[in-house]
Image 1: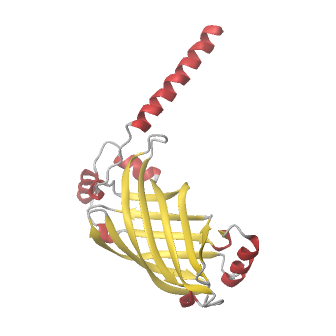
Image 2 (image 1 turned 90 degrees about the vertical axis):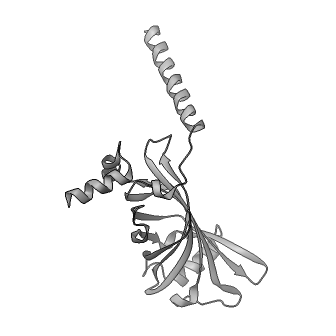
Image 3 (image 1 turned 45 degrees about the vertical axis):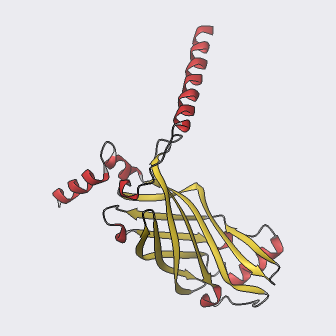
Length: 226
């Protein structure tokens, strides 16, 4: 019994050392052309959507949406065909101040419009690992275009989960009055700056299809099947 317990403890210690080494030697690839083509889903534990708006010229009030998800369809051989779709729970917006949150939720009419949606329409590459992403945001019953600057941070196997993961950062701005949400101007600014930090995990079916293969060989295989 004591021997078995000792063996288990040794195995656990070895597993921790192995994981630690993987983390220490982890180097994601910053080359967008090396991305594995397929469908990705936002990691719910590693995605952040942060907003800032001016208040009387005295401060920039931060807020964030705590509940949202996104799907990314990407092929490094055809980056202009990249598709991003996101759904945001309107009522999950918080500033950390309950009284302010209640007023914002009434402005957004979150009970009638519980979901904010984004659908991409076009991608324009602007640098080796940067692009402009254009799309439409539907919020409070209205739709209007939005553009953002996106930076590819890197891709590779997550050393903790083993899942193939991509990381992106994005910044943009919008005028809330375009969605009929211009109340409180000019005390509260019309322009809202936003920032996205997100990790996307390859869906199991896509991940299985690319194990042991590069994106190029996978694309050639798909073309041959067609």
